[in-house]
Structure formats: structure tokens, C-alpha cells
Length: 253
Image 1: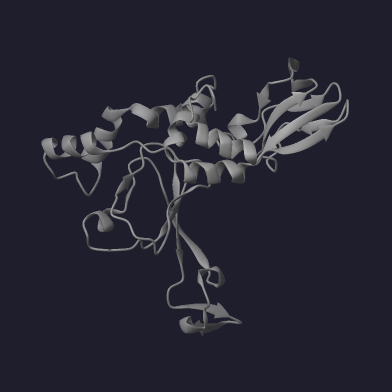
Image 2: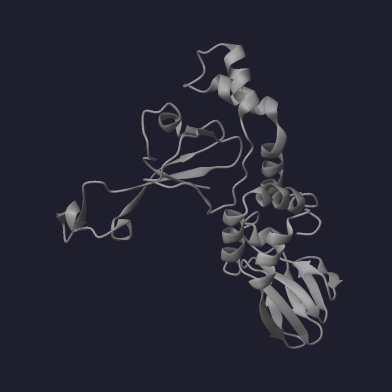
């Protein structure tokens, strides 16, 4: 976070959410290919070995070192290495849900952190994020090829691209939420986003429709996945044009 030049307020928020963990010598902290643990670890005391299948011991980390950055940001789904304590270790951990909340409260920090995290990573996910972060030519091509803007003039497309703001979203992060107000349109430059919608009229209960007025809130309604948006996909155009005042679906990275 310091290398990304994050604000003092953001770093303070993260610091207050750190949890203490203790590990004994020889204890496994993370298993390679694990998908369940998406926390970041800061070594306050002790040393750990990083092990990888087929390579053995890759390196050793010490007090002050951090590991798990890519997993906590959702850039990788599986842990790429096994981490084993080589001495008594005092760790401070940061859970993914805390980071997600922090990025919601401090949206200006999202781009800084993700771009810093992918600098030294060569995975396909990192390359996708790097493309999204600054390829204006790609955005122009996607806009010109889209059904919505394909028949408009080149000057109009270029004007749209010039006004567009880059946004980077972590996997699992909600881009827009059904029912919320908004007037922005989004185009997927890289990656994919799922489209979800709650059943609007009724949900089935024992094979019979259940009246909508009996639903207390959206949590009790069935959420359906309607599709998946890839590069070039556009959503939010009705809100941007003022046809709809609220979002008709939830979009999740």
C-alpha cells in the first residue's frame, strides 16, 4: 500500500482491521492451489519458506515481508505457492472482505493498488488488468464494433472514448446493483462480468408461484444469472440515456 502511494486514511483503515495470527515452526500457513483462503499476510515476527511443486523451496520471507497480495485482490483464484513457518511466527492478516470494503470507502485507491500489484506478475489475469488500465485504442475499437455505436461517426466514438474513465474491478466485486440509481454506462474492455437479476413477479414455492407482496426484501427472492459479458459488452446504456432511473440488473465482476 505504501508503494502504491495510498492515502493515510486508507492505510489507517486497513491497519485497524488487521488480525493477529500465531504459527509454530513447521506449520503450514497456506497450501498451494488453495481457493478458500484469500487473506493477505504481514510477517511481524519470524520467517517462512515459499514452496512450489516441481521447484521446491523458492525463497524465504522475513519480518516486514508481505505475501498473498494477488489472492486478496482477486487477481488469482488459487494460491500459487505453499507457505510454511520455519520459526515461531507472529502474522498480521487482512481478509479479502476488509479490502473490498476499503476499496468501496476509498475508490480512488483501487487503481493505484491493482496496478502496483500486477507490476511483477506475469499471469494472464494480470495481463488482462494491464490492458484495461490504459489501452485507449482498444476502447475505440470496441466502441466502433458495438451494436449500439457501430453506426455512429468516428468523431462521436472518439469523443466518447476521450470522456471515458478507467475503472478496475476485483473478481466478485459488484459494479452496479439492481434497483440502485445511476446514469453511467459501462463497456467491458477486458475480463468478464456476470449479469444477475432478482425474480420480479414471483418465486416458486413447492411448485406454485408465491405473490410478490409476500416478499419482505430482495434477500428472500431468487437471483438468476442472465448471462456473461465479455470484452466489448456494454451495460447501463438505458440509464445513461435517461430511459431508466434505476438499474435493472446487478453486474458483478
